[in-house]
Image (cartoon, rainbow, N blue to C red; front, side):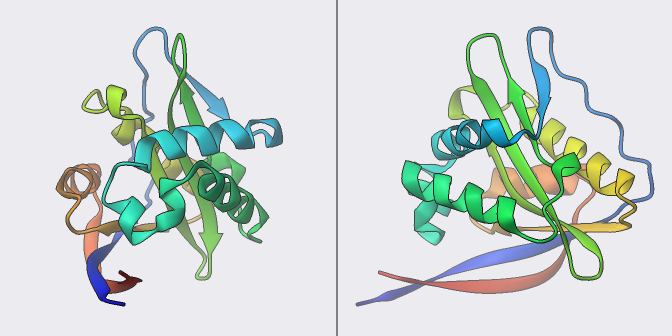
Length: 176
């Protein structure tokens, strides 16, 4: 079986309180973490990643059951941070999801940023990242990081625009 290596960037940002609080367009609203919404996080995560490069890097993102399992695992992490975990809901559906945990350091770690394909290019990804960073800052954290697949150029550009800088290049091995 062949192994494929995916180039990934670890990107970091200092949290100094200068992140602007994100606003959503009319008809959209923030929904904070609630145990009862775990399934909705998984659903929008699946819609966001199922046909993207990251579903090859992390096959669980290409299956609804994998996204459900991943959400349960994130929720059980000792540093799970509800203040950095959000959904955006629109008039008819959930639009985006983000999860955050406090990692060793302590440092905030964004686990996933997912925006359903039909809502991309409208600023929802940027809003989700800023909302999570606000949650990390309110928890007293001074830095945050995320990892992104290098081929996902729109995500890399988004994170740079928010203020993240590449701190490390990693390679993820995936069985064929």
